[in-house]
Amino acid sequence: MNYDLRGKNPPAIPIGSLVLVTGISGCIGSHVADQLLQAGYRERGTVRDEIKGVSGVAHVASDVTFAPDPNKVIPGVIAAAISAASAAAKQASGKRFVYTSSSAAITNAKPNVEHSISASQWNDVAVVDAWAPPPYTPDRGLSVYAASKVQAEMLKRFGRKGWTTFEESIKANAGL
Image 1 (tube, helix red, strand yellow):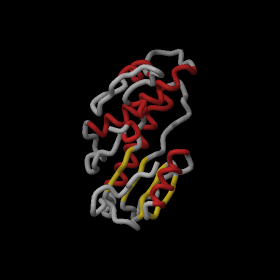
Image 2 (tube, rainbow, N blue to C red):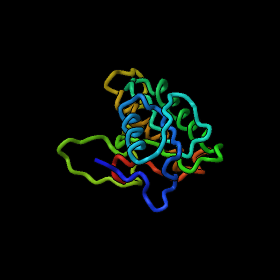
Image 3 (cartoon, helix red, strand yellow):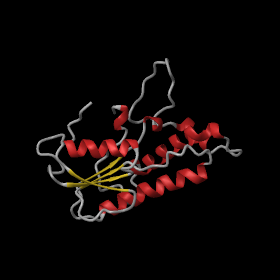
Image 4 (cartoon, rainbow, N blue to C red):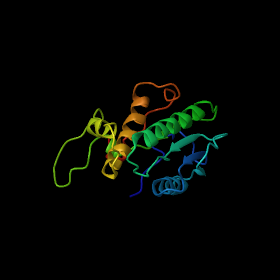
């Protein structure tokens, strides 16, 4: 499916501008980069901070190891999101910061069960499951991943320093 990355006229980031994509070596990051190129933007892919001179940042990188220990996953996901947003906020050329979340931040998948979701919804069940006391068995990996997305996203929603300069662009893959 093709998306109009430019949105409104004129686009928030002029066509031809340089956009940084974190986590470009991953499946989603490479797709984001491809869509940016098709829309007429230049992109810089990185797995480290290479932010100088960019007009936008698509923070796609995340810990997708599905490791069951929340202490080894969640603090790193939060720190990386804050670091990327803070670095972007310092750029005079920066116009947009996009944090790529997950539908797992809203709810656990329920195959063949119809349910409603909303932009104000959080996957509190995943957060509770992720931070439950050990043992950290492999079946907790998805809850830890979902909790990492919930908790990083909550920092944005509640105005953590470094996030406040940028327009919210999260939960996009859930259509919200």
